[in-house]
Image (cartoon, rainbow, N blue to C red):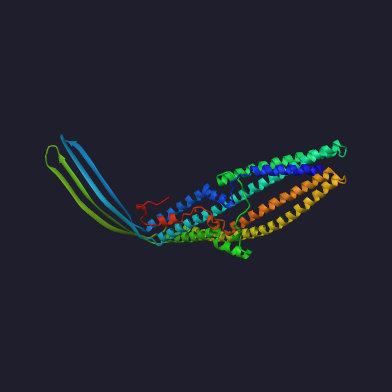
Length: 460
């Protein structure tokens, strides 16, 4: 009974110490996700890539629009001949106009290709968003579980210290043996090593959390309100993933881009027609130093022309380009089928992961309850002399293992829940309702689609 008093006092002091070390300001999972969303360099980089892809639409649309340019030039010449100085000056200015009026659908295909590539970049951004947010969930739960594990192993260490003290006290009064003391010392040393290992892993997890979120973890909590995003059945989850997962949408956009590329390649066999026009004026003036008369001349001119070109033979280059484009289209369709299969498998794995976590939680709870009962009974029997210290230590080890399994199972279910959201394509800032400005290049794409955008400022 003396041991039980020592253990109760130790646990009480440990609880007080842990409570005093908890920061007053809590950091919910939603807050961590929002902070990471604003902080993540990967998302910012993906957003920039999407805006760069949007600029490709402008370049493609320029193919069906006229190009207009102006030029101004002049010269001044001076020469000496036969003891006479002569000088001449000239000035010319003009406008140039050029437009392709027919290119066998090449420009339209390139515009469609550019729009598809911009769509690919946007869905790539959504994929990156899901990956970053899921990494944050994993880091969050790793820190939370690591802190629980450190506290548990600290409690385990306190238990072994109390056991060692009890074994030494029993040895002094002649009720114990040196073997009991040695076994308690060995188990205490092992407990200290496990405690230090847990602390080291926790420090690594906290560093990973800070890298993702941009701040150190504070008072974390397992509570969240995202379970309502989980559908009621596996079939519903698969259907939702096949409709809205960024990976599926990205694959569809890839097929669209490949089809546009194939159309662009086939246009190489067709004719091209362009019109050109120029308008300008020239002025010149000259005189001699031996004569006061100044001569000058000038005039205006304009021209309009057209050109039609038809490819006859290009050494097989055009045909090869068409075959390559067709093969890319087939490859995009095959990749899309693979994406469907991978996402469907990910949904099934995440769904069964939640079910497995539920079973593990129930088993862990039962294991903890039975291990506590066993430990209490072994301690009582040891105090009566029918059990050994080693049996007490082994019972405590079983209880610690069961409690660790309970921690891992509880945190594992939360990770599995977000893994399912990730597999369904719903682990996004918008779906989670995070208080952030959603990163998207769609407004930028709409702005640069303006044909007169070179005369305006496009927000970055």
